[in-house]
Length: 225
Image (cartoon, rainbow, N blue to C red):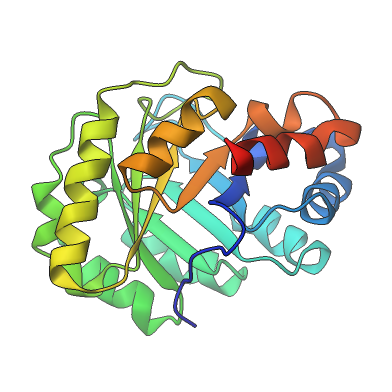
């Protein structure tokens, strides 16, 4: 099923990187009930980025707890050998970095063959022109507004220009691909991201930071911002 924009403000994808890992099932159920549109899963290998997080078994374990799409950001290299495992674990969206394998076109094509939505991730230092060469295979462009590897970093404002450039590229191609922004997103900069062309916002501490009683208000604040 193609990705679609939200009719209620931007898509909000809480990142479980900021959740309480001792009770992930409860946490993901709580954010879905609070109004989350997607569930964002940051996969890190300690090689491509300087941190290690979770594998496909955790994604598989989370799936029975939510009905919303599971949005998996693969910060691993090489990425190709793990596409099947994450798709089998019920990832709905698989996003990869151009730097994580030798053949981005082939990787995106394989993701689509597996029945998932295919995303390309642009680090702060990665030029957006790379997307143009594979635009027909892209369902999502994930623009990193921090350098990947850790949560809680400060938003890099220069990436707003990149959002604008990618938005123009997608609109010119007419593919309908969505733009997601990840890194330091809070209510005070969410509006600027959407104004620049973003459709979806990843938020970690901005959603999970206050505990379950605050999740609905935090998600609403991001949508209203």
